Length: 211
Image 1 (cartoon, rainbow, N blue to C red):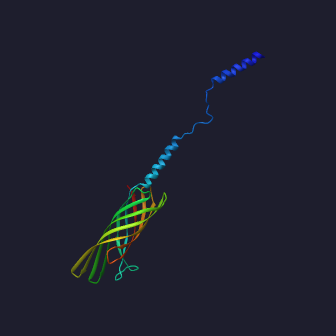
Image 2: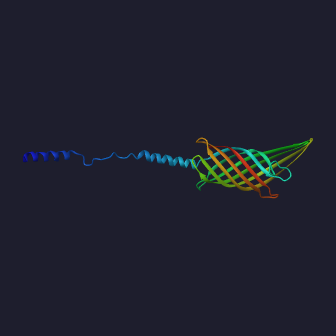
């Protein structure tokens, strides 16, 4: 009997010595993929916030005029703008330089008037609402325009031009169509600094492309 017990103890001791010192109860967690996915999401988020957007917008420029108006005391000019939006150091804060052209043609009898507005602008905008598919921005527009007017009476024509600086608030939205293309729309209300003081409105819409 004692020999049997001694033999059993020897077998158990030998078996225990053969076992590895640490036996994991659960397989180790694979953290490599999660870290990589987190880095990827961070990079994607940074790309969405720091991308350059070039936009082509069509619409109208409205100018107050008490003698000749098209709608609610405003003359309507049709045209569009080319712009590029880029972020600066502050999160969700952007600068947006642009070039625009608008025109208006009127005729009555033998008299015709052709007006051109060529403008350069710089807008500062802040993203009030920043979603993955939607963005709402508020800011300030600064515009310097060259106004050219040509009056034709029968076979005679006269022309004149003048520069004007305008400033005022603006608001814009951007809706994602695809990853690289967005629908964009901007509205602004600016005021001429030099006299006579006039009120200008602008409404343009178009497509923006990531660069």
